[in-house]
Length: 203
Length: 390
View 1 (spheres, one colour):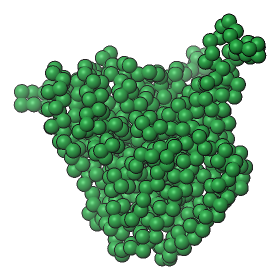
View 2: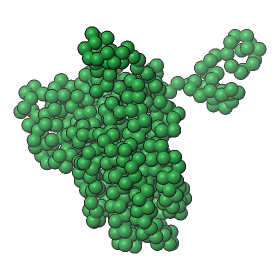
View 3: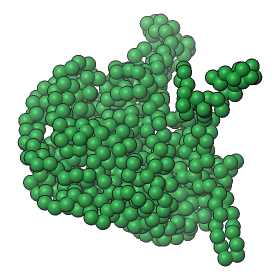
View 4: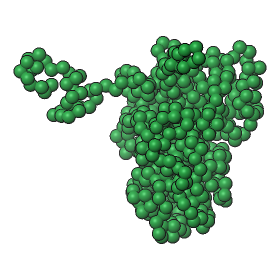
C-alpha cells in the first residue's frame, strides 16, 4: 500500500484547499494517522473509499477522544493549547486486504463548535458508532440519518466519556442509607431546617 | 410487497375483495420486544412495527447493560482491565483477553514466547468451538426446537469449560492472557485432555449435523430468510461468520496473520446467499476447520516459558502513542484502541464491539419478514449484550 505521505499528497492534489496533515505516532505500533479538516472530510472519505489504489471499503472502528486544554512549555514561555474533541476512524480495504489508514477529525473546541460531518453516508458502519460518540463525547455529526443517544437514555444530560465529566452524587439510592451513600445523600439533599435544628441527621 | 405499499383508500381498481381488504389497511401494531424476552439473549430491545405479522420497521434500543467499561478502564491500570474484558462477550473471554493483550503488546512493543502463542491459538480455537456450538443451539431454540439441540450443545460446551476451569480457575471469567504471554502454563495432563476432547469433537459435530443440517424444519425456517448482500455487509462493517456467509473471504487469521496462525493449515468457509442458513452452515464448517487447527497446534506446541521474562505487569507504563489491535473473535473483529500518555492507565481505551456493529443491518435483514423470522435472524447474528452495551 502507499505510504500515508503519498496518500496525503494525492488528497492535496485532488482537493485544492483541503487540509490534510500527518499526526505522528511515537509508540512501537508506528501507525501514524491522517488529520483532515472538517470542511471537505466527507468528499475525501468518498475518495478514499472509491480510489482504485486504496479501496478503503471497510470502516472498522470509530471512536472519540477528549483532549482537554493543556499548557505547553515553549522557550518563549507557557502557551495554552485549547482543548478539542477528536474522532478517529480506522479504515481497511477488504477488496485489496490492506490497511489501516487512520483518519482523525477535530472539533473547533469542546463547547459550542462541536459539529463534524458524519461519515455514515460513506460507510454504513459508522451509524451506531457515531451515535455512540455523540452520546458519550457530545460530538454532533451533521448529515447523520438518525443522530440519537445510543447507550444512555434520552433525558440524560452531559457526556460521560469526557475527561471533565462529574458523576452525579445521587445515582445510588438505599432505603436506609449509611456510609458513603449517606454522606453523598446528605450533600445532595440538604436536611430540612427543623431536622437540622433537632440534630436529626437522617435526610 | 406489503399491503402498506398500496396507496391507502384509493379508488378501488381491482376486484371487490381487494377493496374490502383495504379497509383493514393502516392498522400497524407497535411491539416492544424486550428488554426481558427470551429471544433477545439478554437485555436487548427491539421496537418493531408490524403490518399483520410482517415487520415494516425495526429499531433496536441499547444500553440496558451499559456500565461504561471504557471509562472504568481509563481510570485504572492496564492490567486491571484484563479481568474486565472477560465480561464483554462473556462466552468468549479467552479471545477478548487476547485482543486486549495484543493491543497492549503493539502499544509497548512487547514480544511473546512461542509456547504462549501456541496456547493462545489453542484457547482461541476452543473458544470458537464453544461459541459456535452454543450459537447453533440457541438458533434452534429461537426457531422453536425447545431444549434438545441446545442441551446437546451445552453438554459439549461444558467439556470445554472444564478445560478452561482446570487451566485458569474459572469456567467463563478466565482472565488468562497477560501482556507478554499467558498467566500460567498448562497443568500436567491438560494438553492430553484437550487432545482427547478435540479428537472426539468431530464425532459430536457429525451427530449434531445429522440432527440439524438436513432437517426440513430448520431449512424451511432459515433458507432465504434474512438475506444479506456482500456489498451492504462490507459497507456496514459486518465481520466474522456473518460476513463470510455473504461470500466475502475476509478472516483476520489469514489477512493479518496475527499470532502463529500463518503456521497452520486451514481454510475459510464461505457462504453463497448470505441467508440465515448460510450463517448457520458457515459456523458449522468453521468448527471443522478449528478442529484442524487445534490438532496441529496440540501436536506442535513446543516446551518453554509462557511469559516473556522482560514483560512488566505491575508498574506498567507504556510510552506515549497509540495502537489498534484486532483479532478474529468468534463473533467477528474484536479490537482494542489504546492511547497512552505515558501514565499507568490508558488515556483512551476503546473496544470495537463486533456484536454491536453487526447489529447495524438488523433492520435491513428483518424488513418484509414475519416477526417469528426476526427472532431467528437476530439469533443468527449472534450477539452478547455484555459486549453490545459495554
